[in-house]
Length: 130
Length: 55
Image 1: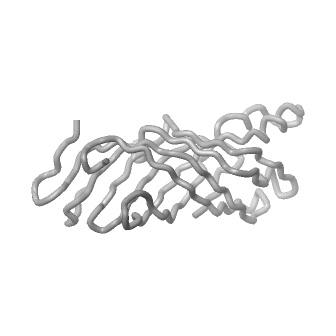
Image 2 (image 1 turned 60 degrees about the vertical axis):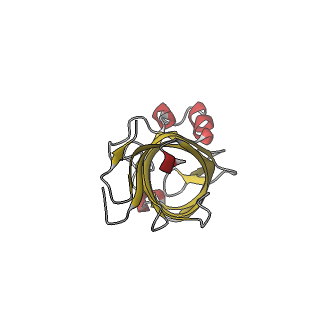
Image 3 (image 1 turned 90 degrees about the vertical axis):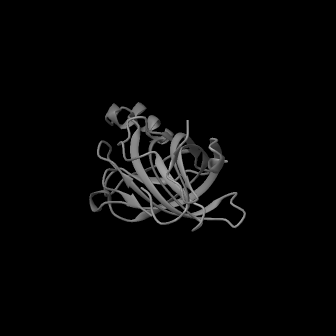
């Protein structure tokens, strides 16, 4: 994990939450889609051991973090309660995100270039983003 | 904070551009997420010495 840079801290991600400010359209198949409702993400306690950790390099002003998240889509609840779809859709959707970040000059934040991969186990497996 | 060996709460605001597989019709959507993370240092490598474990 160590490089030639002299000011590095390796860290673990111990907590995570996030909310989307608005709903998005989620496809169910080629023809149907639903509104997600406000999306909620929390840390995935069952994430792969390679997740939920990162490295901050103060000398280069870079931060890399990889984390596993479970996403909840309230729109799925209404869909399942309609009785036409499998209750398994209510299982948390799991994803892995990897962010390569540039620290702000005052070290109070960063700008992220992230990638997101939906894991097997949900209808959105195979979806990916950046 | 992390450099001093202390945990740090950080806020994030990020947008993912998600592409759907073909069997879901393809296309893409933007998912914006705002929230916070708690980062806890494992060890630091500062200066010319060996990495220092952080209790």
